[in-house]
Image (cartoon, rainbow, N blue to C red; front, side, top):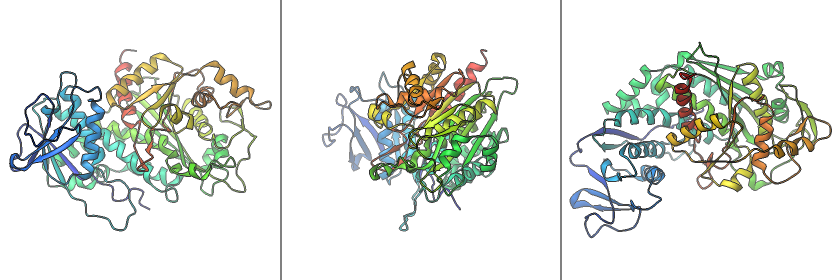
Length: 507
């Protein structure tokens, strides 16, 4: 089975200091500049002046909203609809507060995201058309920005393809096979998309080959635990969630040992529920929509490893992705069941729809006990509470360690992904422990308040006092309007690995 179907880049980006003759040029104008009277003075509006061969983009550069995200989102949308080859006047976007390097990152990443055709099963497929954008800039960092963005967005788009797969095709086994295939292939055409390599544009093909030369895949180990091995490791919480499914669970482990002399290991643990019915605490029908995206955390931690192709940093990283359906069946786990976790703690499962924290708990223990992780970061579509609090634009971040959190903040600043910190307080843990009289901890509290914090507090009980960050992506993993995955957190995790690399030299 092909897990990724017809998902190839359709926009080629070229960086040069002179315009291509006979092509239209996209140029930004603002209120205080001179431009033709025909240009519509509405923020975000495009006006084509054919005689000048210029697409005028009117933007209010003085507005507070004029930032990376404004430009990024414009190019995401523009690249999905535009069918013209273009010059892009990068300098015209620049303001004193928004430097050219940030502009370049926004244009490149927005175009690579929007100009990428994700997985589809439509039978009336249109033939993909190759579009060329020429970024006109003399910035000496342009090539590095392009290379960094290509590595990150290739990772993001791989995650998006996994996210968009229908749940009747992407089960735990197929997910694991897709990751195994990604990190064991030596075919850069397959890794970076056919059009990047097969296009006749030498600049694009050259960049793909440059990435391939830096391929660190020999340093990345892939291990997949099947159900028998999961049982041997006594990952009973994962098995409890899987009990009602016809499809067996898997655990994917990725190891990157860039600094064998160091004992520091960054552990990334991802929730991989390929479809979440809620179990016996069944979700209402409207909440079953988009539950194929409940594996987005696992997709993010695995796809972020592909970003190592760019830098080969001197850092040790392990990713643990716990994969299963949460289904209903004759053998499904019953509400109020008590299960012993991998680390020995007993858990009363008072809500089978709070299953993500169960599989993550065993994943955390595996990362610590088996892989010797010294820091833990979890990524999961964990709670509806975080969506109620932060909506679809902000990832919720919760932590027990301020230094580790500062590193993640730096990573967010570089990736330009948005987040907001939420608290974990002792009362969260207390509420979980008081909600059971027969086990060490309950997987939910009796209160409907602070749901995101309670979820993180549950996970904190399994990190064994190590530095810990939880990223709740329940609001940011997909777009409700399009029902498409976003690949959120992939860029930030890649940036975090590079920050960890920089800090490792100071220890």
